[in-house]
Image (cartoon, rainbow, N blue to C red; front, side):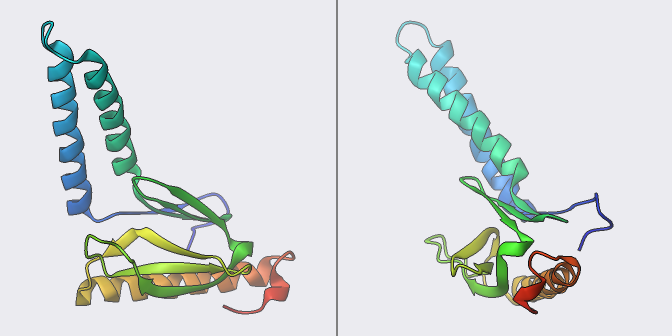
Length: 161
């Protein structure tokens, strides 16, 4: 999955999802600036807090996605960042994203300790194209995991994925 010992592969969240969330963050930021800029009637504290939250939201949205490198997988959503080292991964599966927004399919990592981590950063609506893309990504992750286990003295005892 990586192109050598130092490079990483970044798989961003879908373009439209990033665009919509970035625009929403920009709108909130404009509202915050309006609150701060108002004369005495404006709530400057509310505007400042809303402005900081908007900037953080835009920053997180632009970084959403999956990063795969020699040390493991990093999944970034707007709320969380999950870093999973290769040695902790027992399996990669397709799973229900469990989202109220209707996102249906996502990749899930199961660790050797039994923890299940849904990679919501790449979750998508259950369409044929999304499912096919996730199946292809799962196959790539399985191959990378198997390659890691072959060359790793720490987790080689774990066997194939």
